[in-house]
Length: 143
Image (cartoon, rainbow, N blue to C red; front, top):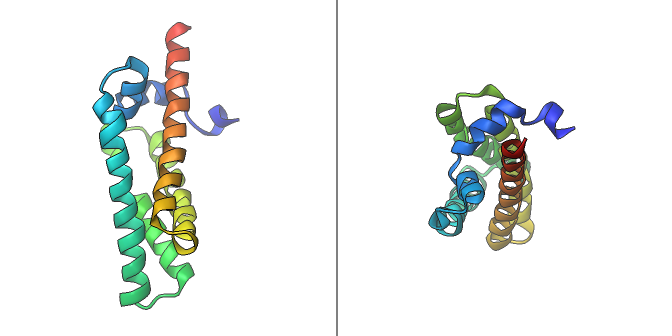
């Protein structure tokens, strides 16, 4: 089902350009995989959850649902940069959708469990996505 609505062969081929997937499939660039990838996730969670949620809740005095929706939309639009790297509408939609729902989920986690768990969930879900995509790339190589 994921292939029908998600990545097709063309977009999987394009995803080889992603630094994390490249590190996974070529077994190199371990610095990207174990340093820059986690640092990116930590920074994203600090900016888009911790700081933006705090700003929306405390400075703009928004209710929790509005703050969660606004921070999730901003987080989703932040991922628009994938369009400029991949130039693939399917990849863009997947990233915008995935990041919006991850933003909703992470904001809920922030409000209930704290920033550490936001980072942990974001890292786990994103890493799982990239591992699965790298497996699809490797499978395509064998065929």
